Image (cartoon, rainbow, N blue to C red):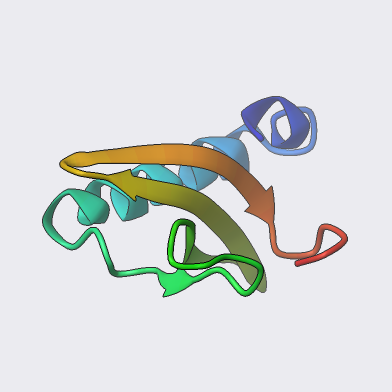
Length: 80
């Protein structure tokens, strides 16, 4: 994501990274903060991260005490 945004705006790229990291850090205290993914049977969740006029979706799974980040997508990508 940073590589995609930085040629257009280094400042926006840096802000996006900080915003997403802060959202992911929230999962330490609130692992079920994200919604259950539509195509999942409770084993994958999605955390919506507002940014600008849209945002990002952090796909993650919870395995016991471990939160596994599976993917980060822009909300304007196909399928989101």
